[in-house]
Length: 118
Image: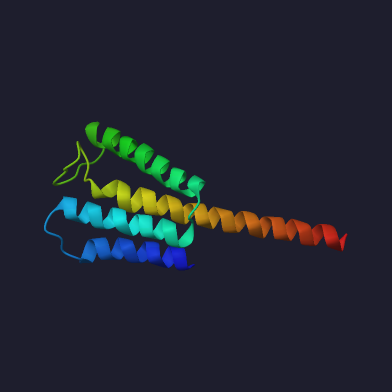
């Protein structure tokens, strides 16, 4: 729950804190995302998952914008904003990875308890 709360806090702060430009916002969000990973995960697979999701989702978003599905007012990285991959995909990937890991541990615990009862 703490990881989800920090993720929501990062999302909220990115909308409420006024930055001079998108590069400053992107660097701040990248540092916060790495801090989120360091605090709650620290695994190579978690870092790889976050970077992979960030890359893949940024490419998909660029394709959607290129094809006219939606658009950004002031894109600064090809067709999208540079901060997009930091906040929604990298931090989101780590948060979803942690939730998935917790659910898998819970499922293993439930299965182990059922086998002991039988």
